[in-house]
Amino acid sequence: MREALAEAQAAVDASEDVPVGAVLLDRDGGVIGVGRNERELRHDPTAHAEIMAIRDAAERRGDWHLTDTTLVVTLEPCVMCAGAILAARIPRVIFGAWDEKAGGAGSVYDLLRDRRLNHRVEVIAGIEADASTALLRDFFSTR
Image 1 (cartoon, rainbow, N blue to C red):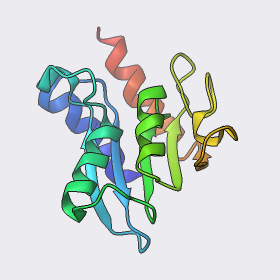
Image 2: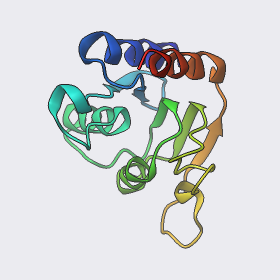
Image 3: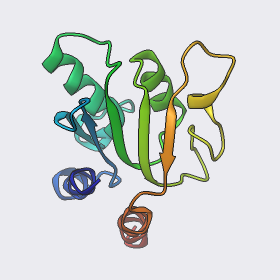
Image 4: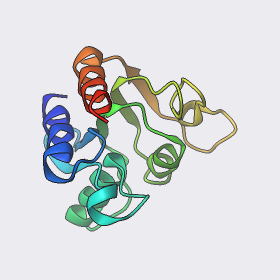
């Protein structure tokens, strides 16, 4: 989570993007993908931290099947990111802060554990939640 928090801070430093960071880990805990919000930098509404980390890992592996990985992200994934997590077959997501307005992993929606879908994800929430929340609160307090 520390690396995801560093990515979140880098999003602000690089382009004034909302501070969300993500890392994708292989089964041994090695980092195979990193991402941060880059919507402002890329002028791309899909450039969320999770999407960027998934793209990075899939490119490095040469395979979109990320079945033996764990995604660590500072903020609960939104519905779009939850869809990408499901599509990539990522089995586990660990996140820091809940997103009570747009969350897709348990707060507003719970797509990652929806029994109607063909893939379900283990969700672990609240890891470094205070640090994740503080980054977001500080960012939005200056805007």
